[in-house]
Length: 144
Image (cartoon, rainbow, N blue to C red):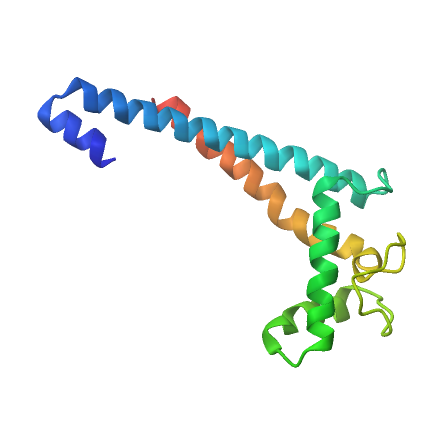
């Protein structure tokens, strides 16, 4: 914004061109991010609704991270992960003896037993975020 104001104040065409280029690149990045969020949302909705039994790359990483975090939460006295334990207690039916993220079976890791609750929570945040971001980028495009 400062570049645009400075360019307008000094009537410097080069600064205004740099400003416009930065605005366009920002809008392109916003649209790309919105598209990525919407496509990931579609993939996660498909998994949540039972259309996809296997995991895509995003959900594979999510599974690994969730299992690692769950293992840390259950094996340490650190209270930083209490929110995860509360979430699991409220939304999942995880066996008490499952504390290792090294499980390779599709049904015995903590994430696998809590998959649908985690997907619901993610989708509650991702769906509106993608549409809001696309709307903001569209509004910026109209204001050009």
